[in-house]
Length: 182
Image 1 (cartoon, rainbow, N blue to C red):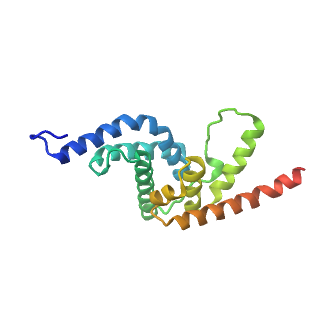
Image 2: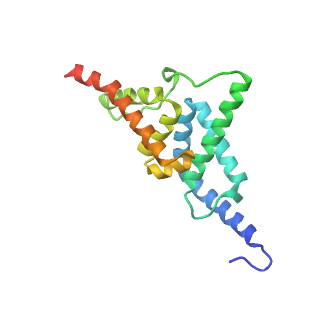
Image 3: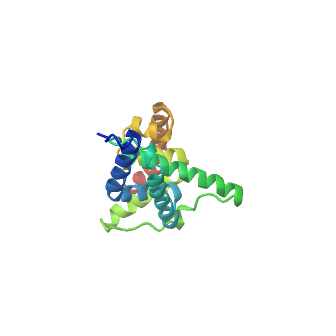
């Protein structure tokens, strides 16, 4: 409860900033992974995740304490990335990096698992950006379709459609290889 000397708005900003500072270190690996999916490179993911963390602290007054900090951060990261893409298009006209050029870590779960994961990741990275974002948020980060729709600022039906289209493309690309192997 705010004191008589401290306005309620300052207390909310202080609570928001405290919650962000407390929870950001635990959320940072997930934020970085989302940044990697958006940007396609480790360096760009590092920059995007750091920029998002800094922006979160600067914009703490816009965060409502007790709500989903991870959703707020992911939405912020996506908006920062889209702004960066627009700025790049104006400056140089460059796009995303090819899948082959991405250096991904290998936690060594086994060769077969790595091969399959690489194939799936390669197919996911060929999807349009909107489908990639939906796949990451729902299947990797395990958000509900409604939460993903809120973060992406689209109707839930659009998220469901993007997921359906992405699944068909992934299955269509990988299924012929599995049939040929049998």
